[in-house]
Length: 358
Image (cartoon, rainbow, N blue to C red; front, side):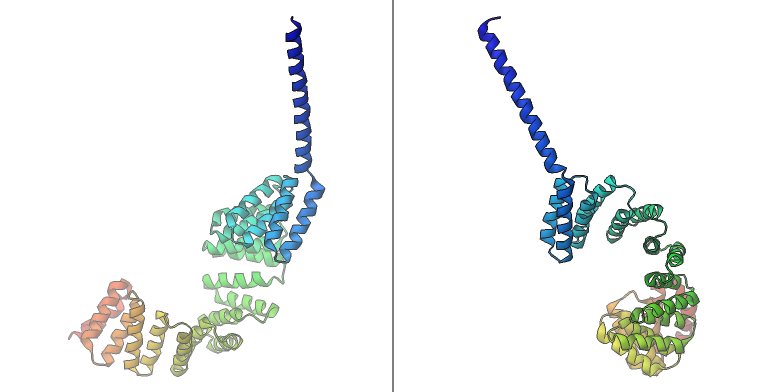
């Protein structure tokens, strides 16, 4: 081997050794920068404090540093996810929760957060799977059952919802939301006695929510206990003078007790709050008709039809009012339209049509 070739090989060998040393140093340096649990947790804590102070941009920077300094810091991903979700960036939030769960697949807290985010995205099957997991890893957490019950309710499986709310209440007998949620489920199941009882308990725990009184009033009304229903509607309206649902419900309750003047007043208030609700015009028209104010009734039914031309009841009711105004041809026309929109009205309206055509 020539001396020149030997020197060249020796030089290359030295270069390779130097390269390996530099690469090793860089690897150690990068590792030190990306796997520094103590510094990562310091940034995480600072990010949480900033987030609680509402300084979200600064908090995001701290969470980013926490993740960069320790890529296996599951809590950093979780906290950053909470920040993204608070800014309605749900997809980014879910990405971070995926990372957190990859690192800690037995965390009920992370499943809870992701499941709740899926609810917000209306991805209910995914949300249900996450709450199944949350319950698997934390079976004595009442909140998990309450939220899974809420998902069942959104999927219109109210029996399953009641079961979950009941389990939540078994674990926490003072769980206000579980009582109100189960109450709503019972309303949808038409189990009004149970609904009234649940809202009574919710009111006992928190007497400051008008919706509890309004919904218990609705349950009482369906049990035909109108005095108690009216009392609850009065309380709801006293607590919230813009509670349109309470005015509407009280209007119907007043009609059912024959107090049509008060019913008109209630529907007037409801229409002040929302002048574009066709069902309220239809209801007030019915109250006017019972007060024999047929001209006003027809005006209200016509307004309801103008707002919603598919409202079969408004056509049917206007037909009856037109009979009293001796406008039989118009009455027949309205009844025919009502049947066209809702064939189930055929049996009740056809005799009126035949009578009017004689």
